[in-house]
Image (tube, rainbow, N blue to C red):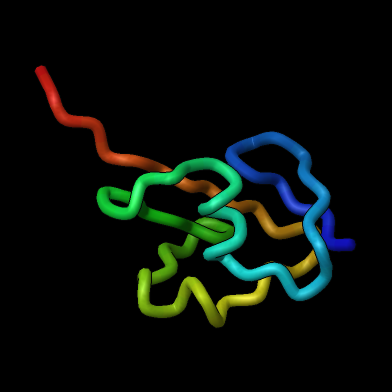
Length: 67
């Protein structure tokens, strides 16, 4: 298991979980999403290959439209 902070909350993920796994835990949205791991933005093209290490801080943000 890998212990991470996902949007500020402690979470246990399976070993070798990637950014894409974290995103699917939080949202079913397919657009308007940005992800940062330990303060560094991860491009969508790397979500499936960026492994989350123990202790990582992951922030998943969704864009909201309106005013």
